[in-house]
Length: 213
Image 1: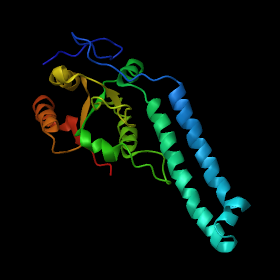
Image 2: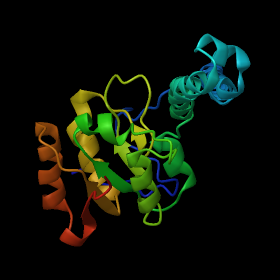
Image 3: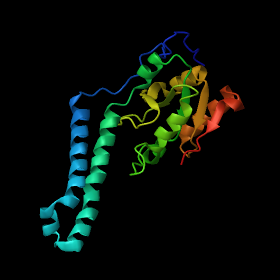
Image 4: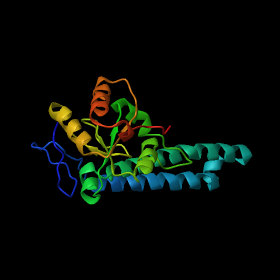
């Protein structure tokens, strides 16, 4: 097993340069944010627009159809704002550099990101994984290994990006220096390998199953 670094910054230091982060220009998150806000303004303006109601038939029916139709730009506005937030997500390297506590490591099958990293609803701006990260924050910075090749990190756990060739060594390193391991059970062989190592290397009280749904 790789011995954890004693560096006070808590940034993982392995004998190879394998921890990396996503980089994007400021224009992409700004463009997504502005487009999202424009669509939200459009959604709120449509019900009071006489022109829109006239095109929808006028009267009460036109007003009702316009109100229902306003949910379309509202939904896509929320998606663009979510995308802007993904562009601005803090990498695991930066999070550990500014938070001196041992991290909380999140193991899950990558397929789980399709549900845990989405889920924008009108009652909350937080995704399922963000809710989990909020719960885990009192224990330490919440980190995970990101999906190789993904364009944007999901919101919630801050991501490391690691080449497949050294994935096993990186997982063992992170297990060695983490305070707690959170598990979202899945069926992928990679997750079961991570689970086997977590059960072998950590005490039962240092393991927790994700209950956010």
